[in-house]
Amino acid sequence: MPLNHPKKTASIAAWIILSCFLGIYQTAFGQSNKAQELYQQYLQTKDLRQKLTIVSDLAWEVHLSDSSRKYYEEAIELAKLLENPELQAQNLNRLGIAYRNIELQEESLKMYEEALKVAKSSGNHKEEAFALNNIAQIHYYQESYEDAMTYYEEAKDIFLKINNLDGLGYTYTGMSVVQTKIKNYQEALALINQAIEIREKLADVRQIFISKMNRGRIYQQMGDLELAERDLSQFMEYSLENDKRGAIYVLGELGNVYFKKKNLRKAEEVAAKAIEINEEIPASEAMITAYGLLYQIANFKGDTDAAKQYLDKLDEARQTFTEEKTKLYLSGIMVRKQREEIASLNREKELMEANQRFKSYVLYALLLMAFSFFLAFSVYYRSFKKEKASSKMLKTKQEEIEAQTAELDKLNQEKDKIFSILAHDLKAPMDSLWAMVNLLNEQNLTKEEFEAYLPILSQSIGNNSILLENVLVWSRSQMNGIRAEISSCNLYTLVESNINFFKTSQFYKGQNLQNFIPKNLEVEADRNMLDIVFRNLLTNALKFTDNGDMISISAEDSGRFYTISIADQGTGIPEANLEKLFGNQFFSTRGTHREKGSGLGLLLSKELIQKNKGDIWVESQIGYGSTFSFTLPKP
Image (tube, rainbow, N blue to C red; front, side, top):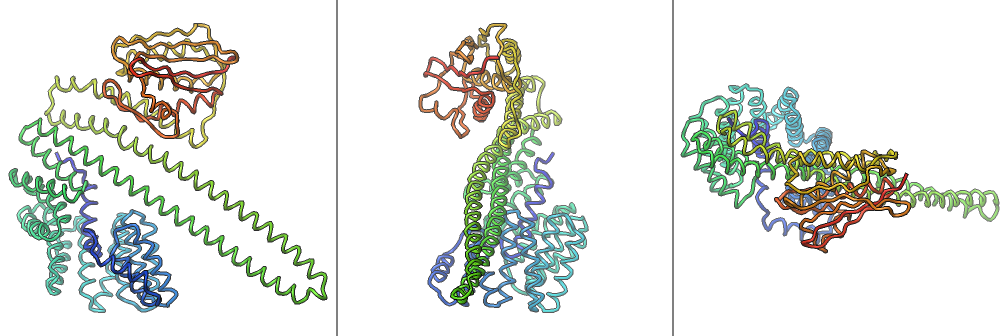
C-alpha cells in the first residue's frame, strides 16, 4: 500500500510542472555572479530609466529569495512614475509568482489581476496573455478547473494571434495539467504533444525534456507503464546532467513505475540515487516519495527490519516537510501583516501630509491678513491648538502601534512554539500508531510485537493527553480567556485523586508517592486550575525519578498563606537551569527514561498559581532531588 499521500504527491508534481511552465524553475538552483553585478549597477545608477531596467532584472535574478519582493515593488513604482506599462505589467506578474511561492494566493491573484488590467489598457498582448496564464494557475490550485481552462483558452487565443510560440508552449502545458487532474487523459496527451512540438521548433532542449516528463506522468496515471518509463527515464538522464533538483523529484516517480512493473532492483536503484542527491540538494518532499517506495519494497520482500528503518526515515522526512510548510505558512502570515501595517502607515502619512498642507495654507493666509484682521489671528490660534492636539493624538497612536507590534512579536514567538509542539510532540505518537495499524492490516506485526509496543504507545498518548490539555489552557490564558473561579477546596482530596491517577498511568515507574497534607486542610483557589498545577508538578517529579524514589506532597502554615511543596529524590536540576524553569521561554530536558517534555507545564503552572494570588518557586541540588513550592491564600 503506497505511503505517499496522493494529494501531497499531486501538489509536488504540480509545483514542478507549473514552475517550469511559468519559467521560474530555472532560477531555483543558486545564483550566479550576475546578481552581484546587477546589484552594484543598481546602487551606482542615478538615471531612473536605467534603474528601472536594472532593478527589474535584479528582482528576476534573485526571484526565489525574500529580497526579490522589495525589488519588484520598487520596479512597479518606478514603472508607474516613468509611465512604462510594459515593465509595470511584467513586474506585477513576477511579484504575483513570488507571493504564490510563499502560498499567499490571494495576494498573488491581486498582482495578476492588476497586471492584466495594466496590460489590457496599454495594448501589451504578451503580458496580458501571461497574466491570464497566471490567473488560470491560481484557479487550478483552488481546484476551480473549469475557470482555469477558461483563462487558459483566452491566453491561447492571444498567443496564437501574436504568434508567440514560447508563451503558447507554456499555455498548452498548463492546460494539459488541468486535463490530467480531471482525468481527461487523451485530451491531456494531445495538449502536451502540442507543447513538445512547439519546443522542438524552438530548439528549447530543456523544455522538450520537461514536457516529456509531464507526458510520462500522464502515461503513468493511464497505466501505460512502458511509455511512462520511457519519458520519465529521458528526463532523468537529462536532469542528472543538467538539473539535479529536477532529477531528485522524478527519480521517486520513476521508482514507482518500476515497482508497479515488479522490477524491484531498478526501483531500489533510483530510490537510492534520489537519497544520494538529497545529501547535496535537500528536498524533503522528494524523500517522502523515495522512503515510501523503499518501505513498500521492503514490505513486499517481507523484510520487516528494513521496513521499520525506512518507516523511521519516512517519518523524519514527513516531519521535516511539515516544519518547512509551517515556516512557509508563518512567513506568509508575517508578509501579509507587514503589508497591512505598511498600508496603514501610508494612510496615516497621507493624512499628516494633507494636514501639513492645510496648515501651510492657513499660515500663509494669516500672514497676509494679520496686520488688519484680528479675527484671522483667532482662527489661526484655534487651528494651531487643533494641530497640536492632532500631533499628540498621532504620537499616542504611534506608541500604541509600537506596543501592539511588541505584543505581536511575543504572540508570534508563543505561536511558533505551539506550532512546534503540535508538529513534533503531538504528531509523532499519532504517526507511530498509524504505522502500527498499517502493519497489523498488512499482517506484518505479530501479536507479541504488538503487545511489546503497547506500553510505549500508551505512554506517548498519555504524554500527549496532558500536553494537549496544557496547550489548550495556555492558549486560553494568552488570549485572556481564562479567569480563576475562587472557592474553598479540600487540598488533601485533590492531591489524593492525582496520586491515584498517576499510580495507574504510564508515568509511574514504581516511585513511593506520599500525601502528607492534613485531611481537613482547606485553601482558597480555583479547583480546576489547582488540579492542572498538581498534575504538571507530579508529572515533572515522576519524570526525573526512578523506582523506589520518594515523592512527597506537604503543606506548611505561613501566616496568611499555606505553602505547598512537592519534593522528590530524583536527579536534581543544575543551578544554571533553575532560572530558566519559570522564565519567559519554554525549557525542557529529558527524564530518567529519556522522556521528552515541552516546557509548557511549568510556565502554565506559574500563570495559574499567579491567577490564584500565589507565588511559585523551586529549590534543587544535583543528585539530591528537587522541591517545587507554591503558596495559596487561606479561606
